[in-house]
Amino acid sequence: VISMCQTIATEGYGNVGAANDWLQDVDGRVHSVTRRESVDKNVALLGVAAAEETKRIGQRKSNKGVLVTGMTTGLPTLDARLRGMQTGCKYTLAARPGHGKTSSALCMALSASAAGHPVVFCSLEMPRDQLALRALSQEANIDSQKLATGKITDEQFKELTTACVALGKL
Image (cartoon, rainbow, N blue to C red):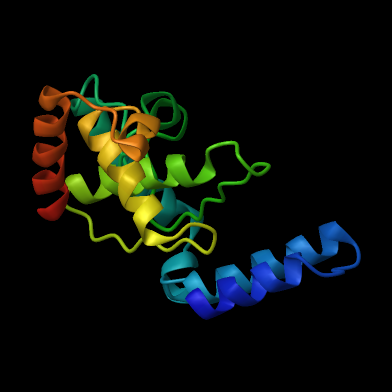
């Protein structure tokens, strides 16, 4: 997966031709590498699939007030829209540079990890010290610029060390 992502990132900086055609090709390659379910699980009689889904709806009905049926993103508005990240679905986080993709993805990764899901976080754009700074900032709820400059209070430093311990347990 990492090798494929590196290849795609390299291609993206070059002349890819028609953007829509390239994106469809990328989508196909990502899907083929990340697909975990067999064809047998995806092919079913409509009646069987409907019965299985009716059972799941009944379970959700009995859990009144529970909006997240998948893995939480840690972002309440996104969770309300998606009902959390659902098994078997693929999600793409895209935006122009500097619009918070890494921060959003890191928030989702931390939330998933805190909920007990195994997480591997890779960034082709940001070194690990910056990722750690952002994770500490999110966990301690301290502005990352203050952490980067060291302009924090003694109380904030205590919160930072608590956050470091919490992150170490994920």
